[in-house]
Length: 479
Image (cartoon, rainbow, N blue to C red; front, side):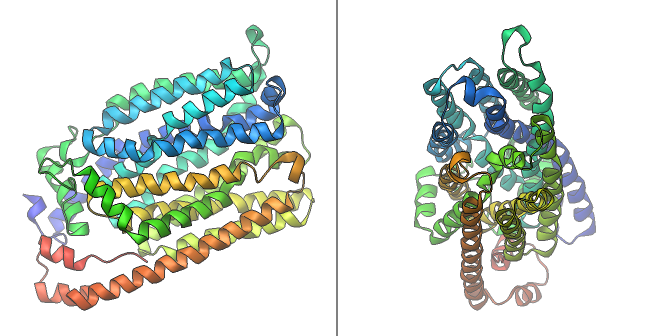
């Protein structure tokens, strides 16, 4: 069997390349499409705000900010339980599309709201419905991809959110022209049409999305064996659970391991700081509106910065995989974002502010590599990784909650220099924490070198044999 061949065996390498392509074609397009809809359904309220939602529901700026932030209350509450349930069920092909259909229905109900309290109710339930998707998708990727492949795939997944930011302006510009059709406001049509599309895509996902490597039906027996073996070789331990022989894992044990690991807390604060700095995303149409153009032109002008961000996110993730480096691929995009904040805070010149928006958007490239770093660092057992991914992502939503109040129009607009200053500080904190994480992991790697010898010494002494013992000795954290 090929899974017993050495990783550098030519026949094994060729078979593995074909296997990875097959996995990519099966999994990545549908995950990206689902994430596009996830972001559209969550953030279309930003476009709706300027096209009548705030006026029709008689919302103050503070009430609008509360409506934005209340979503994350539900979002935070269910992420860890959801990922543990996903580990226990072992059927992402059924679980993920089910929650996609649910959030699509809830998002569509926004069109039925007539007041502030109704909007709050829908937003908190929407947060609960959307909570399982992103940590679940990250966990699914980590179950299929090795350290050398994960950053590129995470970047591709997150491109869904970037593209949704780009397309949302185009889609909103079209759908909002339905204003008055059948007596329904344009912003309500936007929620209705996008929610319907989400539910339809969830049905497709039932037939396309794979389960985990050990139980996916679209692979042959030999392909399944190799898919499991290569993940074992990547970390030196089997990736079929943290407990029982069936691969379900002991959820309480995984939770305890995550709670006791200092690296989980450091990564959580790092991601939270960067998330707060990225809070401009939910207000991007409003910020673009400060350029002084009409409503439709403003929505169209949101498109180019996000297409630029999409390119940056993809190539930064791909280069992070190629070099197996993390810190610089996090810090440099944040530095670019800081330059954008400084430009935006310094002038009201239209061209300069548009350049500032162009530089702010690609800072998402650093955020994506942080997500990859979590899976690379909290690698085993499976339940610990599931808890860490969900818990860190949930904690980071505190950044989104705070960010909902950073960009208030009447308080800080139209220049928003205070908002840009706050986000600059958050990115600087993020860079400092990423450096601290790198120092900590470098120390851990030196401890592994002292225990097992360097990776080069291990390879030389074992003669290239592929064994679980050898792969465990070869594991090192990515810096």
